[in-house]
Length: 377
Ligand SMILES: *Cc1c(COP(=O)(O)O)cnc(C)c1O
Figure 1 (tube, rainbow, N blue to C red):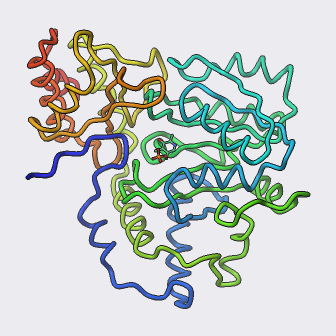
Figure 2 (tube, helix red, strand yellow):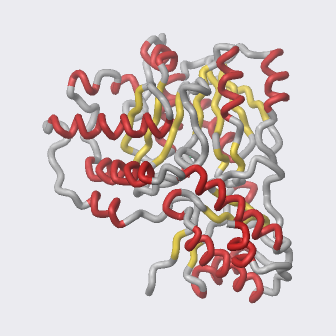
Figure 3 (spheres, rainbow, N blue to C red):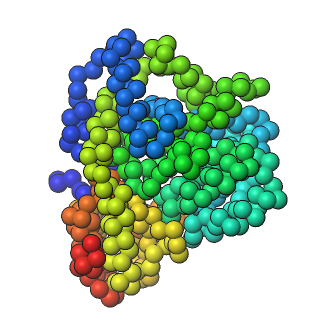
């Protein structure tokens, strides 16, 4: 059977060049000094992507590892942590904070909109005694991108460290780590970068290092302990054997992304045209503002159920789209348009398949999805 076109918001399509990098002959990454240089240069390229001079690390584990490592390494029992929450990942961050002994204070913002910065500002005026705040750049399930450019400098004004989950945004949304004073930025291999799942990368500021290295309580755990990484390069010592093939693939993926100096523009244009297409046909987007450039979330049309749409798309049209989970389960459909999936041709095929699927399921579409897309791209 022909493989379906995977149009989910991660994992994304993995380019042949990246797959070939996976099959490169390996060396012993602990002993081969050239590998330390390769790892460092890969980190340097990620620094460029994140627009930062801060240290960058690559950790052996899927995106969630970054979230947990940040919490494990920064939080000491009893620390007050502000959890900025307008969605499933934002709220989930609170669970990691609690797991490592933090005292959670949730700032909740409308789940259908980007975080309300004015309300956050008013909140912080009254209460700002937090060691750190967690927040999510792109809430992937709801398709909302948050104004981290405004939030992180605001937190910094009160001396609060920011830990930003940018897993589904980095590479597809504007991101200026240093200019926006972001202390930790977390990314994953399988979203915009379009490498196989399995790696986290993160940037960490001097201020964050200072908290990690000068704690009263020791850090619980080893894989999530960032302090073991402090001198890896000068000592030529990795805390554990590196997944060298995954790192070769990540590097190839970063290099592909860099070849397109208009990647951000491409994401923005495609996302806009997708939204125009869906709304022109009478479908309803889930968010009311803060639309993401990497994923579009829209409501399952009345009179249909998610499962029918998903199966028809997959089995008859050969296109895999996504639903969501948590409170959005069965309610929404998501099209990922990030990295390797963010190309006109693939989106055209996806929207044409969706158009045929919905018509077959007797949804009354007011326009042809793929046609409106092409007119607007
Ligand atoms: C994908 C993603 C992660 C990584 O988590 P998985 O669900 O395990 O892939 C973390 N945060 C966000 C916002 C993500 O989109």
